[in-house]
Length: 494
Ligand SMILES: Cc1cc2nc3c(=O)[nH]c(=O)nc-3n(C[C@H](O)[C@H](O)[C@H](O)COP(=O)(O)OP(=O)(O)OC[C@H]3O[C@@H](n4cnc5c(N)ncnc54)[C@H](O)[C@@H]3O)c2cc1C
Image (cartoon, rainbow, N blue to C red; front, side, top):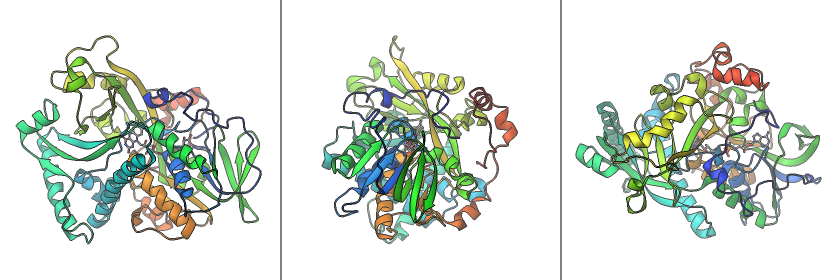
């Protein structure tokens, strides 16, 4: 992958469907000629990474007088950013298991100190997004409140209890967190868990800061704000095919024999990155896969004063948030989908967003009525109204690739957000803008995100998950053959 223009029709998300009006950037500069002068910064990809990148580079005092062009293969936020769960929610202490499990066993392989830095970044991203939306007065359906993380098994509860103690102890050893108020609480009282979460089999829950928004509107707001400076422009339907350096300037070949020249180029192409770096360790480090989400119109039992107050992640179940007026948006992480038997591994590691497999579709349709107390029956027009797919980008150690690409001076990347980009990207790109303009790595950006040869080398110890034969035999493989995408070796995935 990726082939542009794509040889299939993508599903349409709730967010894409509800930001179609004249305030949106659909079709923006679709037929316009690309600039002929050398642009200071060309950003490839118009998701939340590309649009926040443009925003940061055009803030006063950052890159004064410099020009920015964002090239997007389709429409703005047509990738994961316009198809996600709408959650902008930091990981809690519960993520310590994933972050500190060794790389060879499927985790990120971080020390506890490095893991705490990642969690702290996510906490600061939510604060940054909150402040920016308030300061800019953007109307992006933003909500800030609390997320509950529900545990339904004794094993899950015990793991969370252990992680909570680890997290509290690690915070006390961390120079800047020592003595500060922990932002998460942990409650292992079963009666209280059922009452507080409204999940009938809840036995414990954590509570901590979370946010949600209309991600398509948010990406549009970042881009429009960059354009208002007069220094940035956005080009839709401008897929970059290849790059080369000529006399110290990057030349990007764009579909339909167009070219654009850049002093510096920044790839914000997430799941679509490997095809641009064939033969490079980057292509092996990143693995596209599919996730799905649904918009659920709540029945009267969960509307008005009975609407949800919190966003959720539920053990062996979905993550979900509520929109201001249009019901819930809910998704199921791929590991849960596989554990619950509603998706095969082969169905998960699909590199397109053109269909939602039957098992996950049915599961998303049925979850709320089977699990929320007194949900009741759904009238025609209530329940799962729109279900869509999106492409995400796994990495060998679950952390993104950020910074200058080794051996490619003036070429940068922020990609590989492993299904958790909304909680990381807005500050990752701010720090990347600083790196590009000052050559300084901000200490707020975890050093474990940095692109290094050594990281690529370590990534080789991750276990293979799939073989080419398995993929070719799968529904995804058959689909790829049917639309003429062919097949490629599949890199290791855990
Ligand atoms: C169903 C689903 C649920 C999710 N839920 C959450 C959630 O609740 N919370 C959370 O934090 N994260 C969530 N995520 C993940 C999150 O959406 C991503 O991590 C994030 O949006 C990645 O942003 P991005 O800008 O890096 O990538 P994308 O939004 O995918 O943007 C990349 C863009 O690059 C463009 N592009 C690619 N190749 C080229 C090229 N050659 N030339 C020009 N343009 C190109 C693509 O068209 C695309 O628009 C979810 C994702 C999905 C799909």
